[in-house]
Image (cartoon, rainbow, N blue to C red):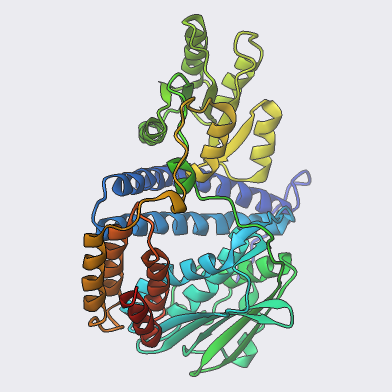
Length: 485
């Protein structure tokens, strides 16, 4: 066999460095391309969810919209995983700790994977220890990714008719998360290597279980970053138990309200002016709809040069923008160049400029902020992150109505209470395995309680939780409580 000799130029970079640089550039480019359509999927689903609530659309309509939104967020998380791997390798990943609802996050993980579990006819439920605090201090994104990876793997590697259980409990003052399945299991000699990048339980050429092989690698790094440990107990053919043990710090205050809750309580003055410089038409539509819902007047430009001209023209007309949302990558003049020009023009140099970009690497964010951007938002545009910036830079409505508190809401009408009791009787006849039917019935009952003060509201939340985990006894007990109200 003839061997070929590869000549490496003496002035070339070491292979490891050049490969790492090429991979980082590839990930950055792919992230940008994928985030652009994702921005439309998540943006329009957010808008439709708010409209669905405003127009009291049927519960199943709102649930389907929410599923679209959750799927988009899940795809965003998967994209972030690839970027996270690059950050881990370069040592640039950091924690972002904040108060969060552990119970809500845990239930969300369960619900996201529920449809997939039902399709495989798995016995699928969760257990949240009542001894755990509802609100803790942690990194929500990393905790979410840990549970997402472990739960998705358990469902993927468990044959039809098996069982997947997820548990959250207190263990000697720490948080213990466990995902238990009756899947194919892992051979003892493979249990250490599954946490290595691109390693899988089944590495055969033709695999039954597809995947990138990055999930457990990222999970292990996330756990270690949170100063925790991860262990696996498994036996081929009998299943696996993944145990994650993390520090447990109770939050002394509840997390901030979600964007939907805040939006319901806030309106901006109609004379606010926002200039949006964005070349993608779909992205323009998303931002236009989001701002319109808040009563904000928006002007648009399709590239940097047009954006600079529009900002100066608005100033001459007496409508100097209160805020400019600037895309970074546009044909012709890009957002960075346009921002430099605006910052050097005394007429508009004071205007806050927020960068909008599909680039999610920390270096790109740092470079943008050095240019003079007031803030940096990553696409897909998340209204939970956009809204605080709007609140910071725009004027609120002067005669903004103060929302009613639950104690100030009118009592539940007699006819609504009668209808609720009928619905409760019907609910008691629905088998616990018909989860979708139970949830639809509960949504219909929730609509009856909307905008009224009633003890039924809290009871419905508990019923929904019992339906999710298929706890027939708990559900029947709650139904009896409701019938006695």
